Figure 1 (cartoon, rainbow over the protein chains, first blue to last red):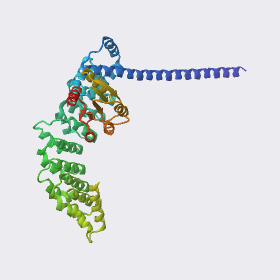
Figure 2 (figure 1 turned 120 degrees about the vertical axis):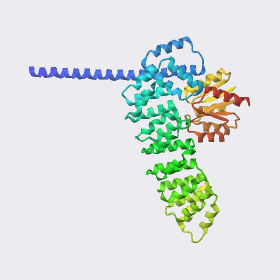
Figure 3 (figure 1 turned 90 degrees about the vertical axis):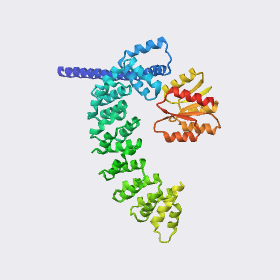
Figure 4 (figure 1 turned 180 degrees about the horizontal axis):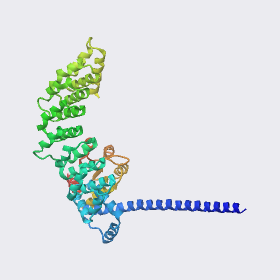
Length: 356
Length: 118
């Protein structure tokens, strides 16, 4: 009897404990949901307040005292300041000229620098990258040494942001990290860096020649893109020498670059090296000939059309011949009795392409 | 002058609005392309400023709608970097001018002045 009494008592106790735990869990979930809702709600209303403040500065109008007081009150909250900084950096990318300067002034007026520095010194990679981005966007030159040190960080997001920041600060000179860079430079990163360089200083050849000789293929490819963007004719010979590079991707980019900075020897150089190149490079040469529209390539293209074993080379050759105005020649050979079927189909395809 | 601004970025929308109101213009704001097309059907604007990429209908669709409804109105297109081909399409459809973001609101006002003086 007493034993059953004890068991029942313990069972009730256990149920009560479980109920209390469930209740605590419900309270925690509700509390967390409410907290999340508050954050979301605050972010939305804060975003409006912040954007209004930025707009006010950009258009140069003065806000009323009540709004200014409300803004100052919010500024005491760390999460408001973090959001303010995020929106400010984002807004800086939308405007240029005096509007952009007004946005930068807001950064200093409200002393948001501290928030950005704090982020830069965090452990989490995305926070560090965010800090770099904010300090670079707001042109905090004092951050350059610390950002420069991040160029050697192992985390991709950090070193990529540091590279972009260095270029934002120093333009072409910010690319000096390429000299010792041994990791792959992604396509996206290459485009980001290229779009941030608006000018190449004189006497910058030495560095670029070094990059063309880099053992990092992505650095060589980036340099070729740079040469193309700024039409750096002086690099023609160095680019031509890359046609025997071990990487096919580098050779393809070298062909594109030669075409972009072409001279009177380009077509004959393309023809001379054609047979030694892998098919991807050969196709790139034909594409460049299509852009160049030089009659000098006519006989070579006819030769490829008739004798090259690769169908893709025949197709591209026929297409370039059409662009060169050799449509009549193609029509004639397609009607000859001794022309084999495959060639007739290729020619029809090329002529059809032109019509489209 | 009655000016329509079609832009889904609230900050850009409000900034341009304030600048234009300051210059003494009457401004109608739309935050998506479909809304802009509706407004264009309803009213005769003296000038339109439109973003290229917008929800529901793009700036290109707005230009097509202007052409379809036979409206003769100067249009300034706001584009982002890398949208060069779309800008060419915009000019084919009758755009008068374009600006690439990031842009200077002051320069936009100058371009609006230049277009409306003609």
